[in-house]
Image (cartoon, rainbow, N blue to C red; front, side, top):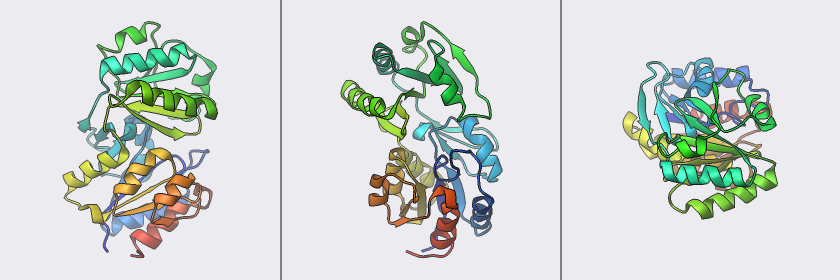
Length: 271
């Protein structure tokens, strides 16, 4: 099988906690691109937070951001697909998180909107050394119906995240998509949004079939694209559910496992 489209998760796949892309990964991506493979990023990050890493990898294919809520060209900056959360459901979820004293961020127009500054914000910003604009708006919950976000992220200790994921799923029903993207993060987007759905859309735009697509990831939010792709690959540091679903498991991110996966499966043609 000759693969034509490769989707790479960022955090935990392309780079580790240090947010540094290993030279081996950059080289493998360059080799894939030279071989005619279109390479994209599929991340929960917003566009301008993902862009520096796309530039490091010299990616020109449209990238998937906001868990699939947006597909945007990294060169022209043109937005190809963008789906906002339903404003009423977003406001209800934000109020429910605030009532439980859970810190939450609403992503609106590439800015982070919060109702108050809390210590969790500094922990979150450590994942974004590229710099992001933060807007403090105490009346945020009341304004969300008129200014719906692309995504809401909430942050807490792992047991609290697990509890709130279940509570948000019960509260939102089919009005929102609810997913865990990190031990400390839960995320809410519009219904039907996922990396898998966005990858299917992008593949269609590019004229690439499902069988010609590869996806590599490590977390719960990567499950839809690993399931949809013709070849789904889990990182060695992936959660058990991702490893169980994937057709292959690469070494962990600390060993530049994405480079191994690209060379072995995408370029090497192993099934």
